[in-house]
Amino acid sequence: MLGFTLAALAAVTAPMTTPGPNGDLAGTLVDAGKGSPVVLIIPGSGPTDRDGNNPLGVKAAPYRLLAEALAAKGVSTLRADKRGMFGSKAAIADANDVRIADYATDAHQWVDALRKRTGAKCVWLLGHSEGAIVALAAGQQPQGVCGLILVAGPGRKLGAILREQLQANPANAPLLPQAMAALDSLEAGKTVDTTAMPAALMPLFNAKVQPFLIDLLAQDPAKLAAATRLPMLIVRGGKDIQVAAADLAALDAARPDAVVLSPPNMNHVLKDVAGDERASNLATYADPDLPVDPILVDAIAEFVKARR
Image 1 (cartoon, rainbow, N blue to C red):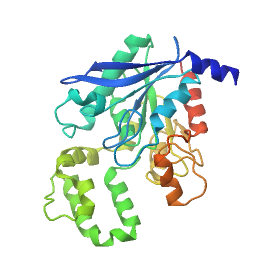
Image 2: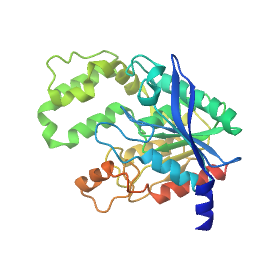
Image 3: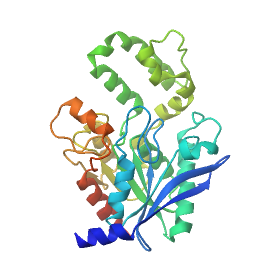
Image 4: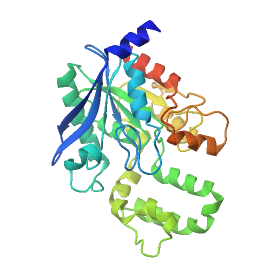
């Protein structure tokens, strides 16, 4: 316990920026001290900020809590706002005008900046949810990258996952024909007319995000995982209701040499859940007082320290 406390006290939290396309990208560095491993936390989908929160109801601060917990284990982190959003708003005029390759470019920009700032020879990329695809894309150019940590990331193409999620809810039955047709079109690289689309489908198929969605649907996480030889830790919580066990299996099959972890009680926002009730699971998405899963923290710290 004394070591935990001293490590936590040694960490220094400070704002950090690095150049983006039109303006700075902004983030928060938690520096655990000279010689500590450095992890870049890449956020998940939509308007998710550097702490892991978004205005759609996620207030659990999973990235901030993970950064603080890792600092207590002697691991430095940088968590950043996406280009065009929050502190990185000036980086591009339209936050929707992005592709996975753009986010991968930003990840490398942070890697270069962090190596200069900390003196680390390389930086670990930790991608959460959609951020795992970004980490995999960035990992195709391994310069300056120590390895990849994929947390609650998809292992199959997004189209298969979205169809599975839509079909799992009986209330979606009347919407399925339009939803499936829209997915077919986007997978073929064609945008969809949303003028007659039910309001319930608009958040998913909003016209402004369709070009990005076309690019995202084309990504094959398992193929990307197989194409890199960087050290890899793959994590999926046993209580994750957004990413299935099949995704973990697909990534594991693509990289059988990777370290695989499945904390039994961890959900998609990295919190432990008691029981299997969906309502209890979702309640943790708005609870910043609940710590992140300790198994996850220990595993990440052990993984990066063992490969210095």
